Length: 81
Image 1 (cartoon, rainbow, N blue to C red):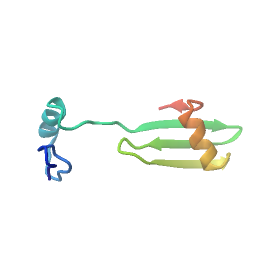
Image 2 (image 1 turned 90 degrees about the horizontal axis):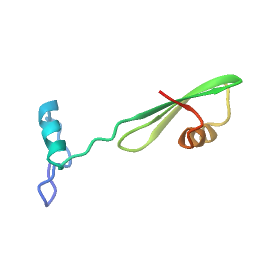
Image 3 (image 1 turned 30 degrees about the vertical axis):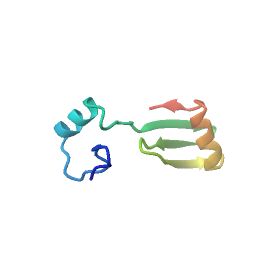
């Protein structure tokens, strides 16, 4: 599917070669996921920020609430994986 300027908005049949040529031509961009590990005295959390938007927070043990863990990762208070 393309927009009015001919840029591809979504394609289910794209392969890595066609994707790389679209990125190189400036018609697409790639934003990698970012993963963080947050350690607490009695628990830990893994935080994932998706390249296209959104996030996931998975915790074990006793940790702050997930909103506080997310804020800590956003502020660089956790280890980037």
